[in-house]
Image 1 (spheres, rainbow, N blue to C red):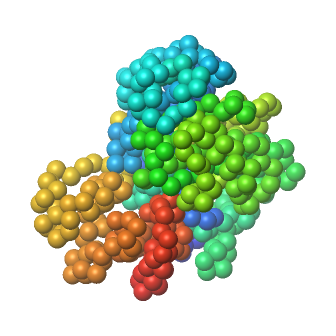
Image 2: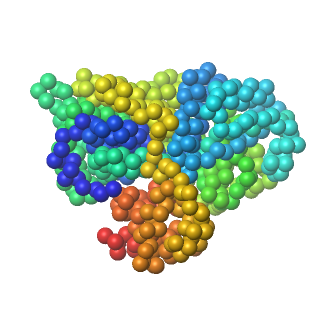
Image 3: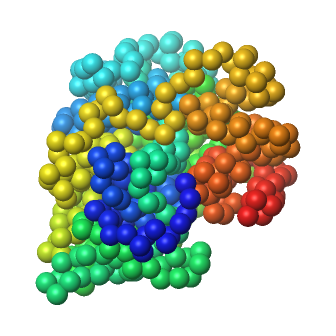
Length: 503
């Protein structure tokens, strides 16, 4: 991808998309695939907001069954399968264990019914089979689990994913299909004609400091938790449409268990996860109302203590120590406003238009992003309904595999087999685009640090192809190094040096 903002000002687009998170990226991908001229604008980096702060799961949402949201769960399970087929290198089926204790809010019979119904709603899109677990089976899976009051449990399947890279795959695919995509472009206002219909946006390039007027026939805002701010730019003093909730996660050193667990909190009866993640453990999430600016969301000590205490209750043999936390992160769920307990608010989305003709995408689950994108395009541009790609044809940038043996690839590029496997797990079929950068440049085959398999060529690729502008773009969203422990900080220094030398 080439960041050429002159293309934004020189063209009038069929569609301007505001927001480069997963929904905006997918709208751009699908629209460009239909031949629509598209401009995708993101005020920070792609996936820098909620779309890189998730629990890293593509899931139907087993807990939504108790709210009787069967249609949402069925749709999410179908979309989970579609994403697994499109990007198996980023989406991995994963079994989850739910241990049930004597005094849990949800009894064992309810959990057994839940996983049976979950598979039933999956239908042909199932990715694994549930089963009921005895106390002995659960304790063998996690020898250190609390046995006091344990009466049994269940196992079911969902999928773990790389949220930031899945978003980026959609951006890259949109670019490949002709969309003009740009990060660090913030929409400051909407341009309207005499009848107050929106015909474009006034944007600011935070890298160059320049202002740009961008014109388009249709505008879709997919700004996640920033949607209310943009609604107010369109209609001053508009009623807020969102009820954001904050979700906090901890990356804890080492694997608490080789199995993923869904656990019931005793403090507030919520559910949370303990999941193997990049050789460590991901613990989360919280679900609390948030009333400040989306730009200032942060992890608070109370959030950390909540997660550590609840995890420690189930795994008492582990001395959960704050010093063993590698990193923490917080994201906002841009839920459509409704009353009630924040953890029980529906994850269903809404797509609404104002009198200006601007469409706003609000709410929704990460898992259903493709279906949300398709609906948004059809609502804004009804004549495109017949041109939407079929589900089975949903293709991402790295979709498709290599038929060549790893040994042959290893010899061709003169790199270890493990490096080939690692690159395929990040870039899919595009792994050789990274390795092609090393031809005649052996220094680009070198690891940037001892803490990970990352090689220098990946940093160059992140900058030249994936539009990374800063070291954090590479560390947090292109390579996921923020979740790994690097005591020497060599990763950051090496990345900053490579970016500087290839500027």
